[in-house]
Length: 240
Image 1 (cartoon, helix red, strand yellow):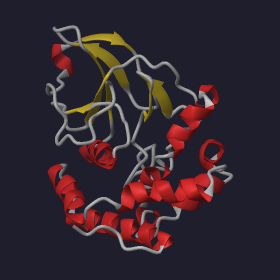
Image 2 (tube, one colour):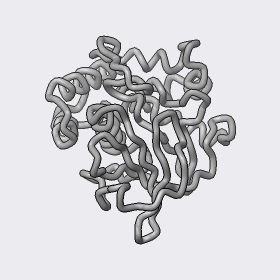
Image 3 (cartoon, one colour):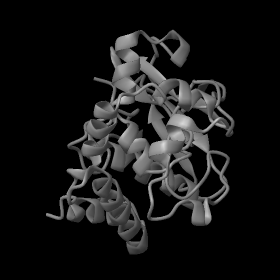
Image 4 (tube, helix red, strand yellow):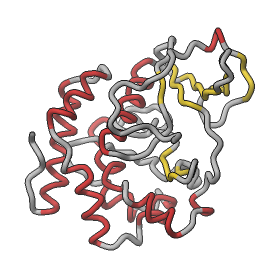
């Protein structure tokens, strides 16, 4: 299984130090990065971000996705705090345009998680942030979730206590690939996607944020966003 285990705590595996590895491939995205192989033959994709805050933000987003059960690549700790590393896997598909209808529906199930974490880049610039590996549909890059945009700019007040992304990811003409993915979801499917988030316990959210070095204010905001999603269903969110 290449996707991370949603029940896991901190990611398993080695601390990635690219100075001790062989570079075997180039960058795959907008940030500087490359594919590296260790002495045991394992391959990792490592990208360098502008600051440790950006890297911490992405690692935290990955933990929150796992908490909710949403498949991602397996994130690993890095020696350099401004780097993000994932286990390198061969993708069977890396374009939404190549997804089967069943794969599209599987990707749609995680709308609530994308909206909760304000991942405006859930679908990607060209439908390339969703992929299939080992038969599992997964989100490939979480750099656009939480407090920063995909290119590293702070979201500021645009990341607030109201989850407007439940609508914008389905209707914003400036995000056409997200609309193509989520725009045809039936109301029942949207409600099911929201419940993926509202069932999460507040104390687990606080725990994950704290373990990844996030501020208590961020945990409060995520819990407020979860409550906003629950209100949309006419229910209370899980506070256990």
